[in-house]
Image 1 (cartoon, helix red, strand yellow):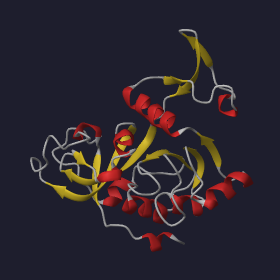
Image 2 (cartoon, rainbow, N blue to C red):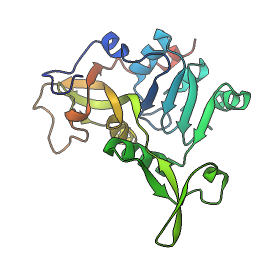
Image 3 (cartoon, rainbow, N blue to C red):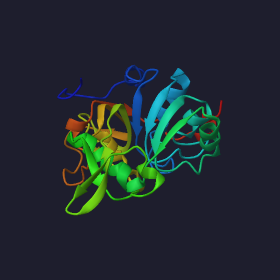
Length: 230
């Protein structure tokens, strides 16, 4: 891939070549804030279908990954929350969307485990509830734990406030939620940045995601939520 290249900045069409029907795609953001808007819009426009999405939530119908849900581009979802997007609930109930719910902290740790090459994590969250159905239970130190498998993705899409030419990233406020985790867990990581600067212009102490985790960087065109409806 692009790791180690002198510049990782590419046109968005080149980045889209990695996003095809049926892939697993991980995304940053919380309630739609911090999800890359230009990339999401371009994925919708490309007509990609059958996606498996991994992320904190389904945002709202008009923002974040919401338009992908509304337009039935997603077949499976691993997430902690869908309540702010009523279309996600309707599609789940009708059987058009397969949803695996995961507590937010557990979801974050499963992504972190995938990034670190671990097989999974142990947690007591969900023991003796429906969340434990079909999952392995182990006993450690006299306590029972669920085995939650690690999560990775074919492609991870990330939204950053600033990136340099080799993919070092700085996030803005709540954009620094799932984005750093997601950036490290994709086989191909594509970053949309509001601002792209030369190498050396970012304060090394402010960099959250190092460029070694990033494959491609595209320039953001900003948020245009109204466009999201088809």
